[in-house]
Image (cartoon, rainbow, N blue to C red):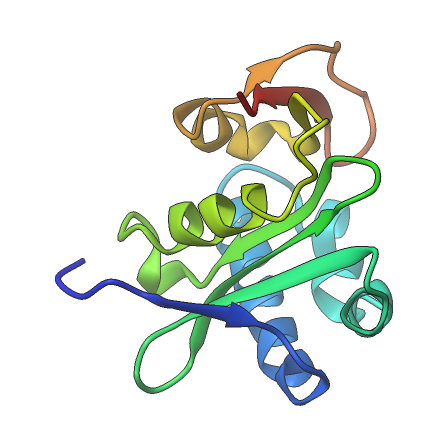
Length: 154
């Protein structure tokens, strides 16, 4: 990436665009590694939590954008020290957008927390490993297998 991404707090007007980013990211992640029926519901249905996260100060939803549009976003639960979402539009992957969002989200976590928790799909575990996370739990056997991971904050 030649230009630093702009990272800002999301507002309710961002929800439709962030839904597109989320859906594109899910589709791109699973199209070649899973049966469509395993992830179709996640692509078809909006994430009803997103507007609630934006409205509730317990959560932080941050957006990374180009001069034209949001291309990545993430959500953290300040109180629980948990990363709840991190998505990047496929055309903007590996350009530092997710890293910029994650770094800004980490800065929002209270100092008394020493770890950031995340439950991530196994298909993106290597991305989270590169972002400093370590697997701390066994994978689930759901249609979309996930693993518990964490990252030190200090």
